[in-house]
Amino acid sequence: MNALLTSADYMQRFLALHPKLIDLKLERTLNLLEKLGCPHKSLPPVIHVAGTNGKGSTIAFMRAMLEAAGKKVHVYTSPHLVDFNERIRLAGQLVHEDQLIDAFKRCEAVNNGAPITVFEMTTVAAFLLFSEVPADILLLEVGLGGRYDATNVIETPLASVITPVSIDHREYLGDTIDKITYEKAGILKRNVQAIIATQSEDVRQLIENESARIGSPLVIADQDYTCFEEHGRLIYQDAHGLLDLPLPKLFGRHQYNNAATAIAALRTCFGPDFPVPAIEAGLTKVEWPARMQRLNQGNLVKTAPKGAEIWLDGGHNAAGGKALADSVGELEEKLSKPLILIVGMLAHKETEAFLRSFSGLAQELYAIDIPEHSNCRPATEIAQIARKSGLNSAVVGDINDVLHFLSARSWVNAPRIIICGSLYLAGEVLKINQKK
Image 1 (cartoon, rainbow, N blue to C red):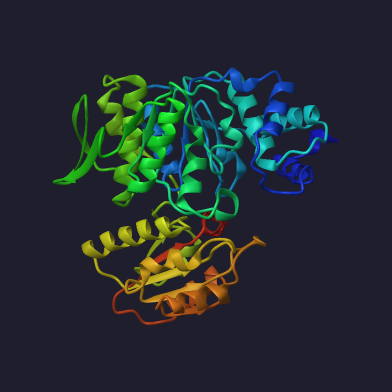
Image 2 (cartoon, rainbow, N blue to C red):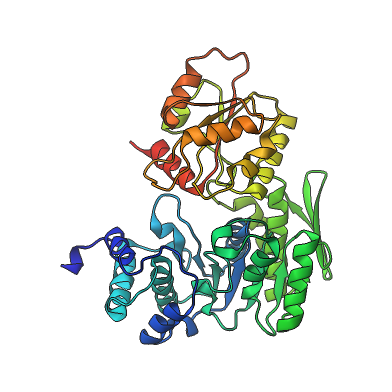
């Protein structure tokens, strides 16, 4: 019977094992790993990445650079956009369905019905696969927080990375920046080098205090390494010298900092001799969907007004909203177009904080529900919040309805359409756009 199950079927079965979707503890993960022979102790060297924003982009830069240097790279990220297998890369390749099913089947059998969350079960399955497929390095992204996240069972990573920390997931991590930073800094380990991306002053000081307590040496952005744009180039500098590099392929000035964090991490782990051509190739070849991703073809592009730009971004908190607004500002500087926002968000996200950055920038906002998601904030509620932020907003059905509505209008200057507010919305948009 089990042989007929798909990976999605196993995921549904895992949901019944724990009353909560998220329950931040390490004991269940460690217990299952021990029953499986401790695969987390048989992994290639690990770079562990926590933070609020930029984790996925920083890992994408590192993967592209490492692979350009000829390394075989395992990757674990979350959430996925379209298919779960996006979360697990084995030596450069997305995990195959049969591999995933086999790992899920073994984990379920050994777990034997014990309480465990879906993320904990899938993380253990990923560790099992990572331990069985040879690779040079594992890039491991924290799921939520850090201190009690299922990925934090790695005792001695090669390095820890903390990307920008800001307010998010208050219901799990705490309602102050101090509490959230404490959780993120939980990935720091004694005598393990940590690379700290650009942070606010209070966050940086909190991380420094925790590192001093733990005994984790730090490499700190704007202190131990810097980066800036000059004449269309990315200039990176650290104690080992200056690199004159191409600008990153990923759009937005915030990606300069993500790229610099990736470079700092690799030069910390592998020394200043990490090949510069591999860094250059990584910057220009990196791929990371739904982070200011331009949709150039597909169903939605055909439905949109002729000549319109469609961009997709998964940012969903105040910092993500500011980064997105800054990126839109960059586009506006190059070519001015009417800005239309199509927004869908989850119920627990701080919608007003996300939308605040678009006041005076967006001409119109259309709120939509996230398809196939029961925990989305109602579109009518998003529109009301947007109006309070000074945005001209309305509700016009789903994504296709909005684009048809916009296409029926006459445009002197075709609009720039930004679809944003949630990675879950981004995933559904990619499905709709690619559907035949």
